[in-house]
Length: 580
Image (tube, rainbow, N blue to C red):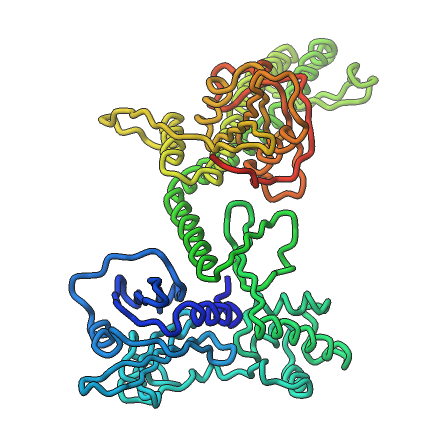
């Protein structure tokens, strides 16, 4: 995720197009370090959100209006005093740096025309909004930085505004080939690191993209290229800069599954794999809003479900250790047959023992009469030693039977917990998460409060429409899977599930038609693959069968079924159908 110089360049162009010539009509400060400017231009009203938050610095146009606190902070009052009705004359970017400058015009107390500047620095934890006069003398800033806080630059009223020292990198827009090569050769770094360390506005993401486009190894030492390779790399960058200079942007978000993982204002060829999905936008502001809204929703969901994940992971870890211990105990118990052999041999040949022996060597008629030595209790007779071994055999036989049953139960518990793990990846709404919590209560993983009355929780599965108009339903958790398969689906509907791994039940409604288009089956299978533990795989084998051939396992956890005579197909995990 890189709010880099290229995104800022795209944003600068968009803001210039929409805001220059307009007037500020309102300024609010809904949160610490965040401002919203309402701007009227060409009979339209725009809202510009500017955030200098250390964790999430942002600048974009938005339709969202946030409530403002009743008491206005001092910095907000100052902005309202000076630029509450200011005209926006220009918006420009400092080279390719992550800094925007607004040139503003307003009337002062005497009615004379006055000019101000507002610098918006998008620099992670060092982000700031700095208000200056036309000569770059700082009037105030949303974050004041004293000499005690930074030895490189004070940001205080009365000081001169200048670029942060760490941002004084070379501007690629004004770099010739010879200088470019000299910079890369000046200090050895991996090639991609050398590019983003030395040149302004280039993020690690864009550096990797440049090297990919140039077909060069990103980890090659920056000092080791041949002259032709340096030249080719330089021209690759120039082609990218040409797109920036001509405003040939393509704001887009990259998704992996349902999660937005990257955004950029150029095409990212490093994300061309089948596991990725690209969404393009006409507006960079819309891209930024959608990305951060999606990320916020994703993070919020992870936070909401974090307790459930911890409970499930802990229970699964315990079950796994228990399973390993039981398997070892079973392996030990499986040695029981030797004790029956000892008993039989002692009963057959023990007559030759005189008593007091600690061992007995004889022929084993169970193993081609090979010689075998049997440990003995010298205080017991042959018959008593034989009985001791028969008793041990009988006890271990009972243990083996009990362990086999316990191992099966533990294995079922592990599969159940793994299915809940997958459901937590699939579920995002409160109702579905509540159902998962209830399932954990029902099966004893979460303690049930004795006074709490069990409430019926209603949640809804995902509902997709196939390309041919057929309804496809996807369960978000085990209770939904159970309901989908045994209450929603009718006998002739088709049931899909990733083969042999945890995943959602997927129902393709047949509308009582005998034959459905192949594409409908393929799209349902792609959803079953996507909503499974193997969603990140290139290909997933998916079973499908008519619902009438699905049977519920008596006493099993919700969503666990048995079936035979199914078909299978290999599907690419995808969820790109229209949702209802």
